[in-house]
Image (cartoon, rainbow, N blue to C red; front, side):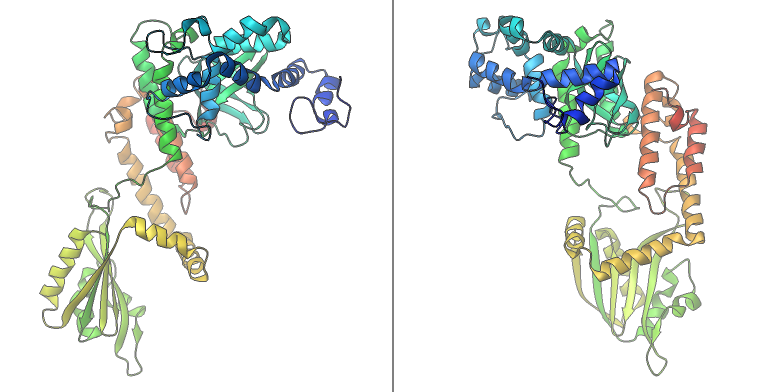
Length: 490
């Protein structure tokens, strides 16, 4: 029975029929009309295939497929797993029981996939368009696809990273948050002029995650055979393994081993001393600051009613920086003298020991060590999160933003970052196999990876405060011979 104008649309969009499929049917666009027809015939397909698989294979089939998908027999099937959107289509259209190790009789599916066996048994009773779609799903392969162009809410143009093929995909929800350069693991299914996604990664991969995908492509290419859908189906477990590795890392990120600018493990120390005289301590330590003299430091200091020094801050610095050659100096810590208390904040155990040695040398009789408070980066982040959006936190952010907005600060940051990326093209990058960007761009594979890294730099730069000066990336692209982002051929 045909849906009424105000009835829910049979395609499952949630809209009224008159605002969805009826509108498309009236417009007469063949591609749009076919897409809506497909949405209608696909309604309920997942439940039908799931019931068929359960009746044909039993619970054992799902468990075996889940173990194959994860390359492990230890984990039971988890219907709440974030990988379900990829696993279920793979189970229906790609998986077949292992002929040697499976406990499922070979006769259960007859060597076919679940969807193939379903068609063989019930295909003559199904809508011919649905049959064509299922057949296309069985023929197509899972692969890694790169977003070339995106029309949010409508679809995107994808390039198969493995084969180089392009697909103009109709995808309403999945295109909402995608950007050029994003990577997704999916099965692209084509029926006439309409391409759709059947199964898609639950998280978009950023460009920097491209390296293991390119490595796998090179590995498969060593077989000497063309990278066709048929060949890639032989490597579906290898591709799933790469997918799971990237997805798990993005879905469950681990805090990396953090280091300070000197390459030392990051561990925050607050060393607390009792001192006899604020002025004596200041005079003994003021030369540790290389960027400001006594006059500048005291200009921000606080004094008591009699004009005596009460509170002052000193930045502990050393010339140059081992990691960043363009830096004039390195900040080792921050010293706060407040009345008869002195607190030095440093970010490594090594720097804490050095400061204790300095205090023993410069204030041998005028300071007494009291204690050290040690806090890990994880503890500090947890405390910051717990603090939430307090007035004090907002004030600190406002102060930080105001500082970054100063022309002299922006100019200094731009100078440092420009020097960093001028040096970056000559550095050996692990993601490039230990080659420098200038070396890597000489090969097609290397050039593709360098492009991904530069695209990631552009993305990350938008989150910086202040954002990276656009001319720096433009100069970087010119130095590497890369096209502008909006001219990328992918």
